[in-house]
View 1 (cartoon, rainbow, N blue to C red):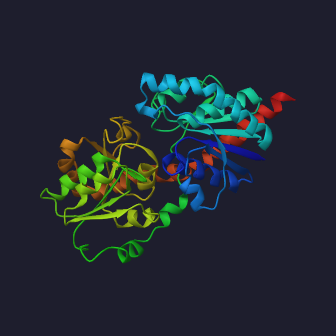
View 2 (cartoon, rainbow, N blue to C red):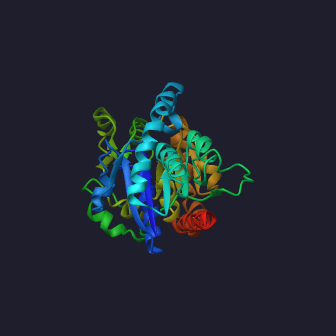
View 3 (cartoon, helix red, strand yellow):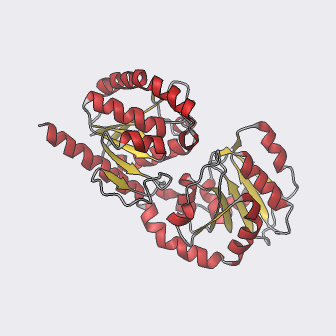
Length: 354
């Protein structure tokens, strides 16, 4: 069996991580996976794993931050992009197409419908939910507006974001080996991240906490979207680590993680039983209410109330770890669950053609 995964984004952030983790789960079940990215995507995460990919057009409207004008421009390009993807599908001959998030989900689902191939959309944005649920089976992740809704449709499934189960195998000792001399093992450690990219509000938040009366090691990870964001990180008690590929070790070092209110990192931290303060509005002002997805393990906060909420989290580490443990097994099994849905959908659609 062969699956073609069509990925939105640039192949270096959460979209690519989601695709890779789904592919890992599918591969364990004997499914061969191929990938497709936009022509302009650098595909750093795939390249890091030695994975080659097909190049097609995947218009993007900005996900949750999409404006009407961006949606109109992306919509205009969608038909042409879908036809390009149809040609790829006919050449690759997959048994199922998996459209990963936003433009990837839309192009994947539309082109598969046109090519008469089974498809599954992995959804997180209002636009992919509106389009893809009319076409084929879909899996909504916690960032989707559909995740917390009461769904009656048989073709819409819910799942936690898929993570690599190896994330729980991190080593605190390895992380300590990479810490500079300024790291104080006697202090609690706060891990600030907005994913592979460092957004401005996360950098601002780290600076603000560094100037507060919270005495802690402040670790910040991620490649800044703009070089000037580095200016926020010049306080002497901030340890800026840049883009890292050893985040699993940092989860074992952190006492509390301050993460953006979305995505794979929330799930990874849950699996590692790290208390989370989810900073809202980091990415273009969008809000996902992850505290409602993982009540007790995630405390959400605006930047204005961050200091207070970090203090509460530090005072309640044991309780938040216990709450995270309630969700850990389901989060770790999410990739397996998603893979089973994709395989089942492919088989059901294949039978219906006969």
